[in-house]
Image (cartoon, rainbow, N blue to C red; front, top):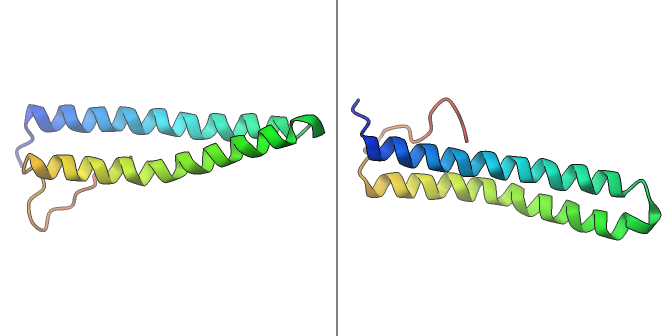
Length: 88
């Protein structure tokens, strides 16, 4: 299987975006959890949980975008597995 330079660059960029997204997910939920210790911050904490939930939706969108981007380069042939062992 031949992996070109462009494909590697695309995969690395999407992996970086996915990692940043995962960090944001953790940050929203941690901050929201801490805010729930104080009744005065409960509403803001709820918003943090909502933002974290939206970030969870972004994750499959990143993966789908990567697949579509790689298909434009012809990197994913018919019947090939689009995901590697690292599911990002």
